[in-house]
Length: 274
Ligand SMILES: [Zn+2]
Image 1 (cartoon, rainbow, N blue to C red):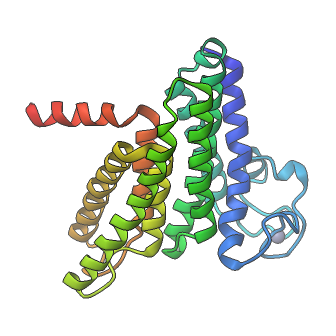
Image 2 (cartoon, protein in one colour):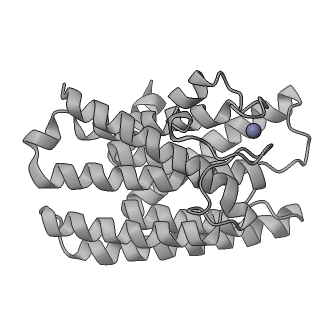
């Protein structure tokens, strides 16, 4: 195993996770994500650089502000650790030894993977907090997905038509989910899917193509339905209480990105034939 790569992914992921915390807090509040620097929401004191280290800072402070001693949510170090873990999973998917052995395309694939992860995580967290998938993040995700495809076409044997294929998949994701949303609204009489979900599906198409989009949405529907059923049965979700669907689409996108749609399809068929 390539220890340097593991360490790079963990440290890089934790630092980006720290920035994701800032984005998730400030973007819905229409605050700048770059200025001013991190400060305590209770006393307004500037956070010192050594207290701002991902995960470690929170542990050194034992979860309290150095100045006013108000608690700092445990979610901050958790998001940093989660981001590090998701980045590491991208390395695992490429094969942790491969970037040295696999050359340019493996490095590009890993690089675009961590970009995708770092876009999905803030979308998931903002959707959980606010039932909202911010348009600028989704739009950036679609554009970067198509650019990532272009990079892979330029560096591997993928045919040039892949570019058009992923463009069509992005449009298909948007149109299909918007139609489903309109249909569900007629049947149920209340909005079942948000407009943001359609934009996230467009992102799935741009990154994964048509087969990947289908598989990602399949995983999203299954895991979302499972979560909703357990929530309603256990009484933690009220009968008509909405819950965000974005996290399940993001999960589907990430799982398909890690292994490719065929892997999931094959295992699904095996599962059905047991
Ligand atoms: Zn404070």
